[in-house]
Length: 233
Image (cartoon, rainbow, N blue to C red; front, side):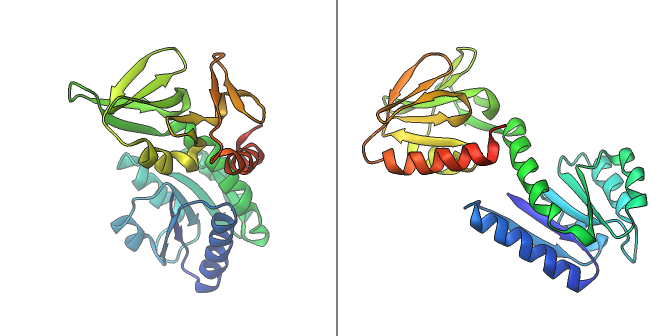
């Protein structure tokens, strides 16, 4: 997760950075954070998933920067920071994700919670199938990944399947922050689609039962509990 903080007052930048870093480390979330003191620096390095953007910057206001992002076709979510909440009503023009009062910076944690819930719904991955064609796979409809010979089988909720190049352990590591877990050597499952869990197996929404490997059992229980606390409604 790439996060950017655009704030021209150092004291606020430091406070916001501290909250974000503590949140991500407590929840074992991989993240990068980039700090900017003005809109010009941010626009030079504007690759981010989530932006905490001060409305009242010295050089230009946050709404102007947000409009530039939209014009550039960027899909990052914007959380406006302000000491004057009456300005929040103007944010409808740029479809702001959150408005955070600087007097209540604890709201940053709720914004991060909500962002992580939506991120998995929007994320796509690409993999090369057996014909060499790049397939775009939406994570929110990916049921599981299974080893199939020397390929990986991507099974979707609607029953469609794709056979692609890849290593299942590497895929598991890259997708774990989005609610996926490798329950045994041959399977990575989307925890969103788990219907039932017992000590030996998981049952997915389509009725498929998958055994939990003994070496994965304890870690799975901890990860699944954390995921339910964070993602599940």
